[in-house]
Length: 196
Ligand SMILES: [Cu+2]
Image (cartoon, rainbow, N blue to C red):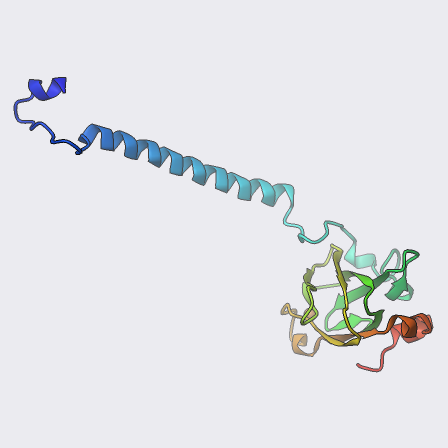
């Protein structure tokens, strides 16, 4: 209050009123806090964007889309449902304009199912209504989704990412059957479902 006595024009503040300098100082420090938060958040976005290289979040696994049909996991003979030693199944599907290969897959109900997908051309989508399965299928990457079907049934599998003029016709099916029924199927029957 020393400068108040030095400046006769300044009134003495009544109790409870904060002096202007204090308000300005507080506002300035909160401004700094806000600016720091902004810088930190921008840094997080930039760092995760660059370090993660904007990969699909589900599974950062790269693959050459040009040689899918020639070598590796996604050659045609390896597509469809494969039983694993631990009792689970792995389903491998290639999405391409404007089709899923294979168009229909059979899986056993009440069994862990791992879908592994990749695209041969554009970005496609893989969605199974009423399940947790919903992923983008990006060329150059393998998308992986795990789920389990509680009951036997037919699940439509539409491409839910606009991929070109034939996008609306890009449908496939997952047919979940009882476990014992699945065991009795041949590998060809697992790959070819009735629903097309
Ligand atoms: Cu598509």
